[in-house]
Image (cartoon, rainbow, N blue to C red; front, side, top):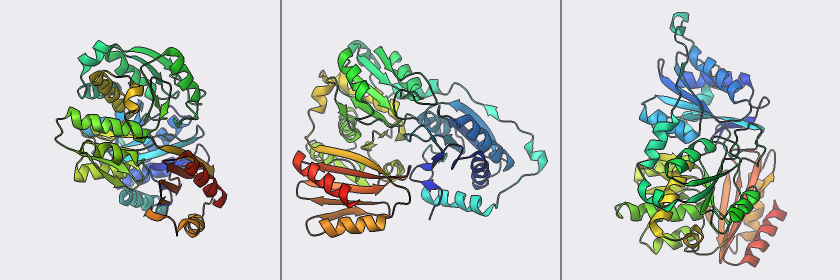
Length: 452
């Protein structure tokens, strides 16, 4: 079992768990995993320590005979698009995505632009833990790092090819962009400008300390943004996480909408927009029941996966599907690229709005209504076996198990379901509850908190 990699790369507190020594060793291990002479593209978000870690990784990669190209500060989806479109052999992104500001991380990406799978991560860990690195002869170290700037332009051009830009421009949408003080500010502002939007901004200054809000876009962290959206009277607001692979929307009434709601609408629009040629979407077990309820009305099937964007991406790649999404705001449109992409989701939402002639609040009101609550409890050394045992003992007679693995447990009862899951990206336990009635949700959540 992997010791360093979680559900989406390696994460740790900068200069403690994730120190230069680890990054150097991981660079040597990643370099050993890839063939000698491979072209690897490195990028990072705005987080503190990103430059330090990227340089340490670069040293390790060079020592293993890798041709390193450096893209600088940019969103993860831009790096992923550039890897695939420019035929790199792989890439490394220095990011901790939605984690708190003190964290940073390392994400390994394959040549297809998708995060590498667990089996490959285990191979990289084996190299790291054993110290069995490839070290090339000194004569092979004659190649310097190549700077590769200006990757955002081709990426934005690709996004715009998948929307009706003229129709969007005609609407002159009034938008609010919350970049979370990180790299989402770069791409979403470029896209909104290209589409003729009236742009309002909040938290768009790039700042490694994330002064505006925490990097994870949630109803709580977006409270001030929602107030601004309502005061300004914007048509739609988009808020990104630290590396901009997620997009959470705030509608025209100032309501923060979770990612499975926006995902269901965008997946529906993807089917309609593409002539109903592909009528399957992919989403994890953590997404709301409203997904099936809404999409089934339109003849669209839903395939569920394990929790984690890589499982959604790989399922789309192997089994097809018009779109994929997560409840955390990750949206995947394979015709652009088969990874979650916050700026693509933003452009596609504008495309949907332009086609419908309705407000964003009216579009979200098309969805079935469920009550949802998501919390996280800080826990170091989580013993999920004990926790799951206690939960199963209480709910085993009245609920059925929907999904289980060593990280999580999903159970469903009459009119409600819940997931209790160890996070794969930070030392917390996540609890999600959904119910048709608010009283049922509150009672279930309180019971679970007490059991934990």
